[in-house]
Length: 223
Image (cartoon, rainbow, N blue to C red; front, side, top):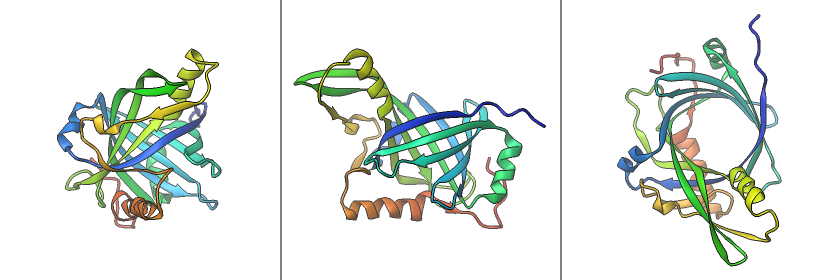
């Protein structure tokens, strides 16, 4: 039996923003780029598990993830369990999965401005993870790119910086200006603070563009 590596358990808190991409060429200015081929399966309680194949600089890895959402949090917060697996695990999990997500992840490393007690401070090296999805389909070849993307900004790193450098400060006002990103995002929707109409737009993006429901004809031919 193959040895199983230790499971990494962490809490992940993010601001999630959906935006229309104004300039596709601006994505080429990202600090890094990955290709994600993700297969997912549903637990009976609604939480999901996935195995993600990540390709970066010709290096391939496979990670099995379970995300347990905090349903009481207004922003995206979950307990995340990650385990390094191999191609055999990926291929086997594919047989039990029910949906597929294919995307590029562009990471932009930027600063964020905060206001603490009327004073502006700058927090460096915050990652904006920009997921650009393939429209419904299977396999990278022949697929087209969605006009909308999903932007994740990890709040945990911001909190760690504030605790280390400003441990005794009071209320913090966070200003995130994604319009300065080079791909010129527009029509942005913050998932934690939006109207019913905008929530419906997010649901339509996932249902009609981002997710492919797996069927029996699909094979593991994704290069």
